[in-house]
Image (cartoon, rainbow, N blue to C red; front, side, top):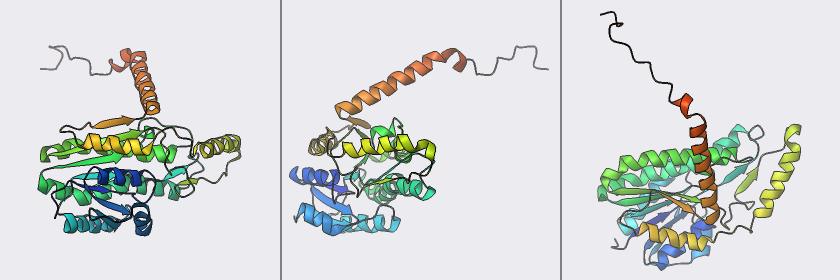
Amino acid sequence: MTTKKVWFITGAGRGMGVDFVRAALAAGYAVVATGRDTAAISNALGESDDLLVVKLDVTRADDAVAAAQAAVDRFGHIDVLVNNAANFYAGNFEELTPDQMERQIATSLIGPMNVTRAILPIMRGQRSGHIISISSTAGLVGFEFGTAYAASKFGLEGWMESLRSEVKPFGINTTVVNPGFFRTELLTEESTRYADSSIEEYADRTAVMEAWWNSQNGQQSGDPAKLAQALITIAGEANPPSRFIAGTDAIAVVEQKVAELQAQIEAYRDLSTSLAFDEIESGNTGR
């Protein structure tokens, strides 16, 4: 049992998750660092009395329940959950297999649901907690070659926005984080899978898109360590934001989306506002 705030972080073995764990430990918190490869987590983070490494495949609900119990057994409570585990199936929708689509959604949408479902009873019992889910600008704006990824992140957004109202009465806050391009391992071979090129009509564009995505690995402008510090700041606020747009590039993308939505509203305002039932004149009701 510890009186320190306890963070529970998924996908902690590499990439952004490692930075999140390091920042939380440096801030004086206890951390439950989870992932499929516990050896990789231990190698990346070392040992600490405030660190508990737990095996967790987020696609397995029983893993999530066991990890949550291990956290409580060690530290007594869970204060901040960071749903961070991710993968990326890239490719044109027609060329992505149903299995690839399901794997994307299983990790990026069902996975956070599994972990949150396991931890919510603990937070409800405490009447406190903070659920932070790492989404993407792809959770707000779809993009070519990203149908699987965007579908999973759009789903994450809707789930989190709805969950917010359900858990707020129990003193539990929620935050969706929309990072732009951060220099993580998402675009490495370990995290990114491309659809097999199988339709000739897409071939030229597919070659261009794969080359572009490969060229971005290691060139992203965002610093994950700074994002980790931003999460520490947000989690420390009495009224944390329901959404955090992370990065100058992310702000530009979202501002463009907002402008496009407003333009669509104005372009069809008259038609949109003409769809209510016509008022029934008194005397023509048959009575």
